Amino acid sequence: MLMLCVALLALTLLLIGAQMYIVLGVTMLVSAQLFFPALPNLVVVQKMVGGINQSALLAIPFFILAGEIMARGRIAAALTGVVQSFIGHYRGGMGYTTTGSCLVFGAVSGSAPATVAALGKILHPKLTAQGVDPRFATGLILASSELSLLVPPSITLIIYGWLTGTSIADLFVAGLAVGLVMAAALCLVVKIKSRSLVSEVRASAAVRARALLDALLPLGLPVIIIGGIYSGMMTATEAAAVAVVYALLVEVLLTRALTLADVVKITESAALITIALFLLLAAGSFIGYLTALAGLPALVTGLVSAVDAGPLLFLLIVNLVFLVAGMFLDPVTIQVILVPVLAPVAMLLGIDPVHFGMIVVMNIAISMITPPFGLDIFVASSILNVRVGEVIRSLVPFLLMNLLALAVVTYAPRFI
Image (cartoon, rainbow, N blue to C red; front, side, top):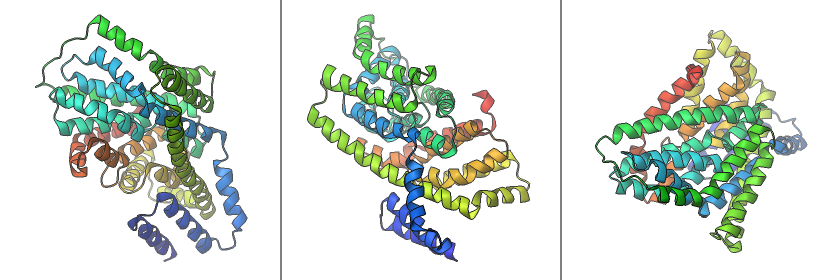
């Protein structure tokens, strides 16, 4: 009965439009008072502050700031231009350009909403000008933007690594592989849908050279981030800090796309995003403590054993739970609530933590474009000036493709 009251409280807060960190924080405090009344208030503060006092999380605000700088400057346009100059002449070339541009931009921003916001206005008119159906163009931009959650420096992977203690470098390697496979699948969809289109004129060597020269500095950023982390020269946090400095040098001093006044506004925006995110992470840290205190992981393990559910059935249940939760909750909330409960069970069943991380992040990526409350649906609606209903209809073929890819990642990871 008490659990039902807590659930109704959370639902009421959601319905009246409360921010998610308020929903999570109030629910957390009420749960602590109802189920653990003897728990000192000092412990609440200790668990919340101690939970986010982790060096790995320092990478998140840096990557958020770097993404905001690149989204407002010229880096996004330069990356799109160089990709288009090399593959834009193929039949459906702008479709391939969209996927490639989102993949490259995701490798420097780590954020799907930032990718939609930065590239949506650039790519959508070019797609429709090439004869691509506007609805398909919208869906392709959103589906391609989800690659940002898979390829390094994915903020979602960093949060999963923090929650489970999994090596972030190992997660980045696996995420890059899955992201490339997803990009190939999107290109296959583009190829099928572009059979009625005509090929464009191939860009001359001079045009390609000019585009490559314009994108030379922006292209250095993913090389520094990914190369620095994989070579062991930098941690993820150090790479994130370097990304901010590099983006500032390119956008402010070299291309002069941004002024100091712009940088102040961008920093303020990034700070607000970071504050909201870390409030969620702090609340999630305490919720993880409460779930451990209540023995929920052990309870779930007992239920799995009682129904004789092996790894395959357990992973099916995990996917269903994440997909349903993704329809109503934001990605960070989903992770901080579900991962501390389900990850220990997965480990006990012998599921590799990196493999489980790919399953979690794939589900998170799908949730970003899943109605009714997928975050990127509303970002695209605002950026592209398209009704939410139209955006949702544009996503149907891509959601089906994502579900198929999720099944492959879940049950046949060796094929990736």
